[in-house]
Amino acid sequence: MKKYPQIANYIDETEPEEPIIILVNGELAKQDKELRNNDEVFLFPPASGGLPEGFIIEDNISIDNVIEDMKKNPEFIRSGAVVVFIGFVKGIVENNVKVYELLYDAYKPFANAKLKEIAEEYSRKPNVIDVRIYHKVSKLKPKETTVYIFVSAIDRKTAFNVAKEVLERVKHEAPIWKLEIRSDGEYWVLGDGKRVPRPKASTR
Image (cartoon, rainbow, N blue to C red):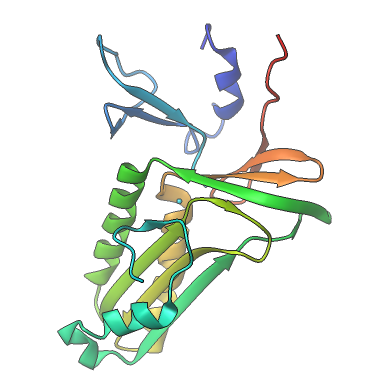
């Protein structure tokens, strides 16, 4: 902190549930972790998070292909609904501020593992047949898709409720962060919609 004081822009001691993401040797770590020689440390801004091989994608996917793949599950015969949530980049935010683009990024191995964990957890819940999550990491313009969530369940109420819960988990837990490039500057967007100005690069 003393050597790199700009990190303080991303640490709010009054809101400890939203710290920067710290990975040491690929694993989550607390700010007070003692480091050893040759430890690999990554510091990230707060996370806002055909058929892809992982949960993190860079291009659009075919909704029909995903649903057809879900039908291959023998338990799908019990399904009464598939709810699909698709997120888009907003072109106007807050007080009519124009958004030019969103930059999504992630530490892919960790992000894929977290999204897989969420999907598998909800797939095991009562009346749920299958859960799929796909999140883009790339430079996106307004009206472009950002995230896809598919939930197959025995009844539509379960499918809708689970899709909503999964979305909130993805927004708050997945190590996916987005930088909003807009008419009034650049802002990191956190999982609950809070925006933090991106510090300007030093000219020295």
